[in-house]
Length: 122
Image (tube, rainbow, N blue to C red; front, side, top):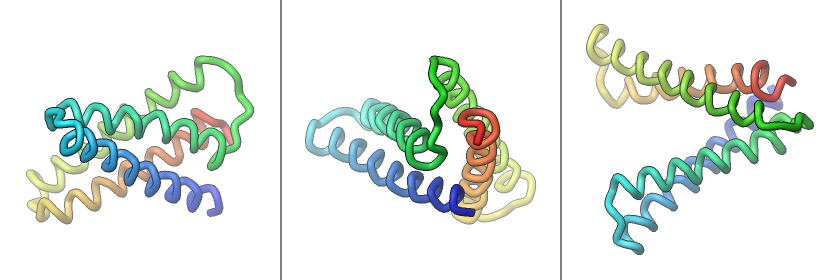
């Protein structure tokens, strides 16, 4: 449970950081919304890896393969999130806002377990 709490804490920080970068790029640096979004998610992905590696899972692994596994987990968890969103909205007729929350939950749980057992191998 302690690991999951740390994971959620990193996620909250990471989300805040990502949005700060996105809005700073858009409103202070006058970048397009698309480039701002890419910039925010890039910073967020890097911060997420570093914080989860060092704070959440305290990984001592060395090498490039951990980064590759982290990216794979991100892609798989996001695909699960997006699939859940589509099913909830278009198949189960759940409200879009509620669907976003449930789909986000799918992402968090999938990402946590894949990071714990596949990327950082706690």
